Structure formats: structure tokens, C-alpha cells
Length: 244
Ligand code: G3P
Ligand code: MG
Image (cartoon, rainbow, N blue to C red; front, top):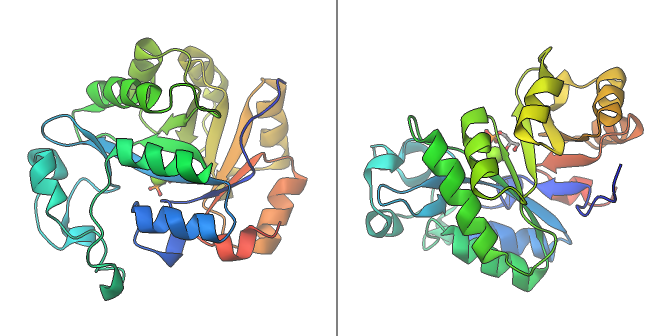
């Protein structure tokens, strides 16, 4: 397989369990802990601006009800994305993809952008996020690694910006993993940690694919996965796994 430009440990949702998820405060905390890579979730506002948010609904993170997909960027930017984690983070906004790119470049963090489309917006999310990411990271290596559970979003990303690397996310292992990855031109499989076995890792490698396990928070489990040949670990506990 070709040389792989990404570090082993990716901090889940930018700061893992140690900061409000998908915020730049989390990214800076990961950087201070010595992280070299982060994962975050990207979706579109009602006016098609890529921003970092996991859920379709605002309730869990922002405490206000309603779908993210119904609000414009300026409406979303007024919300508090931090104080549900801890009152000290009350001023944290929902970040724009462009702000993430600037912060990642200034801290030299590699990024896995998980495209997390709101319902019914898979293709436009894949294409828009890929185009925005290509522009924001132009001339900077490594390129952002795009991933998604949505094959429709990944196919749109592939068609819009073929040169950005893509990874297929799997909640469950599936018999057609190789055909699905091939159709998407994927370079990696990002697999739920409990779905991996040594033979699955070996088969993925034999097919030319790297493997990420998510979400791995236990050091002994991480060591076992690495012994099986897993290439990347996504973790909520950078304080534990960054010493590996
Ligand atoms: O990319 C790995 C992981 O982030 C996928 O699950 O729900 O945390 O986005 P989720
Ligand atoms: Mg994610």
C-alpha cells in the first residue's frame, strides 16, 4: 500500500470527552494534549454553509428544539454550543468548516471530516462539504480525509472533488464492503470497534484499504486493535490513548 499520511490517533468530535463536542475549544484542547489528528461531524445550514454539528436536532447540544437543517448560518451562530458540557464553555459557537480549517492549519492537526447529512440532504452535503474542504485546505497536507455512513454523500463528494481521500463508515460489517469501497474510490474503512477482527483487518489491507476503529477509549483494547494491524483509532479519551 502507498505511504499513509495520517497519524494513528484521531480525537473524536475534536476534543473527545474533555470539551464540548465539535467546538474549536475542543480542537485547542486536543492540540495542547499533543494530538496530531481530530475527527468532527459536518453538515449544512439551511443556507448551505458547512458547519460542525453531530445531531440533526439542536436539543442535546444547544438546548433549543428544532432541526439544524431549518436554521440559517446566522441563526445557528447565535446558539451556545458549549455550556451543556460545562458553563465555562458558554461562549463557544457552532464552528464553520472554514474556521476549523484555519485552526487545523495553525496547529498542524490532520482532520477527518465526517459528512453527517441532515435527512434528505446527502448528495448536496457531500458535494458542498467536499468543495469547501478542497478550497479551505488547498496547498496544505495532509488533505482532509472525508468519511460518511452515507454512500450517497460519499459518491457526491467523489464526483465533486475526486482527489480528496474518502473513507466508508461502517456501524456493522457487511458482506459487500469491498464492492462498496471500490465503487466510492475509498481509501479506508472506518469501522465500529466491536465489528473488527484480525481477519477483517487483514482482508481490508489485502484489498488496499486502511482501517480506522471507532470509538476506542480503553488502552488495552487500543493495543489489541493495533496488534491486529488497525491503522487509526478514533477516541474520546486522548488523555489515555495519545501515549500509545
Ligand atoms: O467517525 C467515527 C464516529 O464519529 C462515527 O460516529 O456518531 O460519533 O459521528 P459518530
Ligand atoms: Mg463522527
